Length: 72
Image (cartoon, rainbow, N blue to C red; front, top):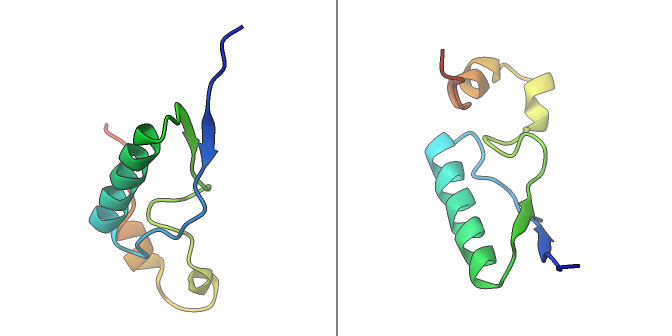
């Protein structure tokens, strides 16, 4: 049986910054690969993050504008 090294990300995204979060994600993946990680788990809604203020302020437009789009 072969072994697979796994890792879990414990970090913050670049809040409400799609490009910044994608860049950070790529950096974390590359760093983990250099350390021998083959499977890397990210928190739910990592890109662009899940700001608590989404429920208390009017950031819905900003949040929606900075999420990844699903190709049509």
